[in-house]
Length: 190
Image (cartoon, rainbow, N blue to C red; front, side):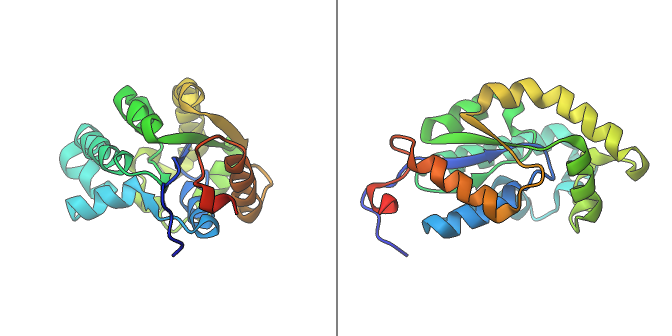
C-alpha cells in the first residue's frame, strides 16, 4: 500500500440497492489504493447476523440504529471509499457525518436496471425491503420516489449508471475525484 502522509477526503457512494455501490466502490478503492468499507457489511459483522435476520427479529428501526452507528464509525476516518446502505441518507445526522469527511456520489439507475440487477443478485434474499419478488418493480419504484429528494440533497454529484460497465463507472469516479479539491491526497494524484 502506498504511504499517504495526509489522507484525502472519503469517497462515499450512495444510491438504491442494486445500483452497484459495493462493486464500483471496490474498483475505485483498488484504483486509488484505498481501503473499501461497506456499512451493511459492518452492521452484519457487528450484529453477527444478516440484515434480513436483523429485520426479522428486531425490525427496521433497530437496523437503522445499527446502520447509523456504522456510519459514525466510518465517518471518523479519512482516505476511504465507502458504500452506504440505500436508506442511510434518510438520516440527516448520518448525511452530516458522511459529508464531514467525504464527498457523496449518488449512483443513480432507472428502475428497470435495478430490477434486472436485483433479480440476478445472489444477495437478493438479504434485502428485506424488497418483499414479494412479483412486486419487485413496484417496490423499487416506490423506494426511488421516497428517497429521490434525500439522495439529491445529500449528493455532491450524481453519476448515471445505466448501460455503463462498472469499470467505466469506477474510472469516471476516479477522474471526477481528481478534480475535486482535497478529495484525493497529493500522493494519489501522481
